[in-house]
Picture 1: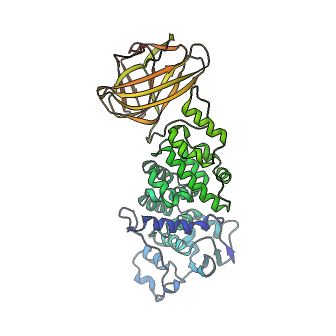
Picture 2: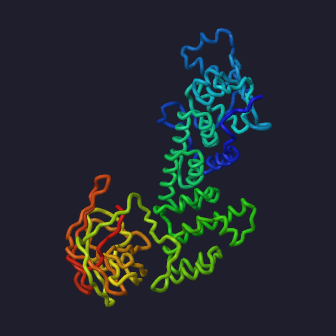
Picture 3: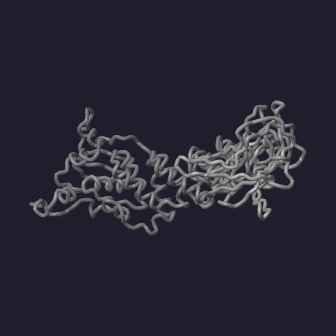
Length: 488
C-alpha cells in the first residue's frame, strides 16, 4: 500500500481551527455563495450511503447528456475506477475510489503520482493527513467543477487543495473565508492565511484587526496564535487601541503560551515565551498612570526597564529606552511631512515662551508630530511641550511633554504626539512648541502655502498664518516648527 505525496503538513491542528471557525459565527448564516462562478453548497460534505454510487451500470452513458454529467456520475464510484485512497486515520478512515485519468488531468501532483518518473504502482494509496470530507470535496471539484465547502470543512479543504495543487479550489476556499471574515475570527484566519501562504487573505485579516482591534484581541482565537503572527500584528502602526489595553492582551497570550508549553505561570516564563514580542509594545505611548497600573506591576519587565520608563515619563533630559515611541495611527497610507522653510539659519533662543504658527488644510488629515530644529552647539538634549490648539475655540486638542536629542546638525528632529490628532478641512489650528535648551537653528524664507501630492494623485495643501499674542517670535517668514508630520 502506497502513501500519498505532498508531505505530512499541518493537518493535526486543522480540525480544531475549522471547529473554531464554525463556532465563531461565520457558519451561523452561511448559505451558498451567491456570486461564485460555480455552485457552492455551504454545508459539510457527507458521502453517500455506503460511500459509493449504487446506480445500474448497464448503458448508464445513455442517461447522461453531457461530458460533465458523465464525469460527475463517476465521482466516488467504483465503476471504471483504477485506484483507491484510504483517507484519514483509524476508525474515521474511508476508502474512496477514483480514476487516475481524471485526477491527473486536474492536478499536477496526481499526474506526477501516477505518471511521473517515480509513479506509484499501487492501486491503494494511504492519505492519513487528509480529512475524508475534504478529499471528497477535492474529487467532486475535479470531476464536476462543483464546490462543496462550509465552515466545518473549508480549512481542511484549503489544505487539501494546496497539497494537490488545485488553485481554482484554493481560490474558492479563500473567497469563502473572506466573505465570512469578522473581528471575532480574524486572528484565527490570519494564522491559517500565514500557514497556507495566502497573502491576500492575510492582508484582509490585518485590515479587519486594524479596524476592530479591541474586538479582535478579545476574541477566543487571539490567544491561540503563534508568536510570529503576534509579532506581525504588534509591529503595525495602524492598530486602533490604547497601548495599555494591547499590553493586557499580550499578557493573556503569554499565559496561554505558558500553558501550551507546560510552564509555570511565572513572570520569568511569560517574559521568555514573549521574546521579541515584548520589545514591540510601545510603552512610551502610555500615560504614566497607565504604565504604573499595568506594566510596572506585571513583573514582566526588568527593574531597570521600569525605572528607565518612569524616568522617561517624568524627567528631562529623558533617558533612552529600547521601545518604539511612534504613534499607532489607526490610519492607512504612508507617513507624510511638509517643510515650510526654504533655508536654515542660526541662532534662535528660548526663554519659556511658546513658538507658534497657525495653519489650515484643504482636506482631512491626522497630525502625528512636528519636526523641530536642534542646537547650534553640538549634540544636546531638549525638553519640549508640543500642542495643537483649535484656534477659534482656544481648545487644546493634543499635548505631549517630552524631549528629544539632537546631533548638532541643521537637520530637523521628530517630536511625536502619543495619538494622532484629527485635523478638519478649512478649520484654523495653532501648532505650538515650548522648548527648554540652548540656542538652536531656525528656518527662513517661509512659505505661506505648501502642497504635497500623494502617489494616488490627491493633493494636500497647508496654508500658514502668523499667530498673534504670546509667541516666541515664530512667524510665516521664519522661526521654529519647520515641519508637520501627518497621515492622510
